[in-house]
Length: 229
Image 1 (cartoon, rainbow, N blue to C red):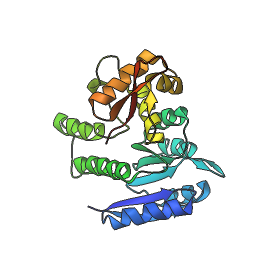
Image 2 (tube, helix red, strand yellow):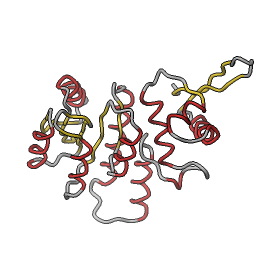
Image 3 (cartoon, one colour):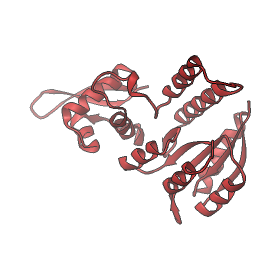
Image 4 (cartoon, rainbow, N blue to C red):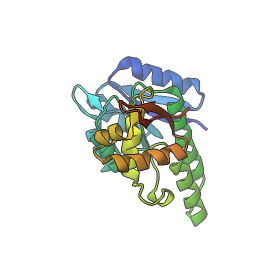
């Protein structure tokens, strides 16, 4: 199956890289590229692609504003956010507006490929479906829940909130080389050390994170977390 895509990204070299990557996969056709908000709006007024890759920060606006506009319209495109933003509120707002994925720059190829695979799985689940049954809904939601950015609370253990979980994931995705203690993660996300530790241990169980031990000034071992792999 071939999917149509529009890329709205203010850095031409990033847009070209994404376009080349998508086209070379043999699964996507690029319907247009825009490097500013005005051109992006004009493109979307004439084309409704399967997928929109949307940057956040533009010299003449904010991609979240465009995302909010699209959500008031009848557009059916899935929207994947691309950003160098490090603020947690950007992720919170993007999730509220129904993004299908959230990729932090510099974009890691394995993470991009996973995001595309999740998108394709959802598209294929609904392709050719004439009416909904519970099994169709369950299969579709299962495909959506494999995404790195969207999980339902029903699949999470007690005491693990999906929004807080996404905030903590965003900390690690911002820089895959960094290691963090529970205290540092708690400070970044705005939760207590013990709360951060609970989420970190959950991510450890799901093999999204790995743990190392370091020794502090008083000789106590301290758990430090980093992305798995």
